[in-house]
Length: 101
Image 1 (cartoon, rainbow, N blue to C red):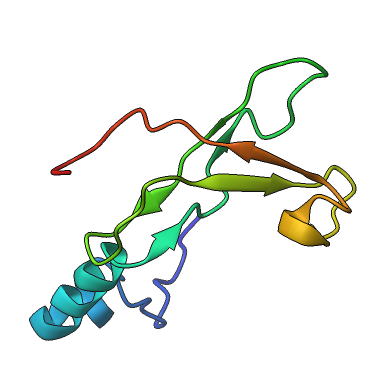
Image 2 (tube, rainbow, N blue to C red):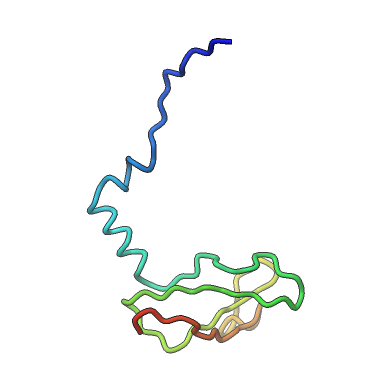
């Protein structure tokens, strides 16, 4: 069986696009280390009742924090009310790693 090679060539994302532009790569890295975000980093993603959950929060060097509070709902809605506790509950997080602070 002889197959004719495809004339369509896919661009390899590793060698093209944003990675090929050093100034955009630097900008992307700088944005990565600014602000505060959790990027839905929780483990396990679907915990069983009573199972501990680890939530990873990254705080950039441009922000000074002395505490972080996680506001949680279990029905998919956004937390609402004073400090998110009228719909949901709040948990004060514990710092487990600190890069340069």
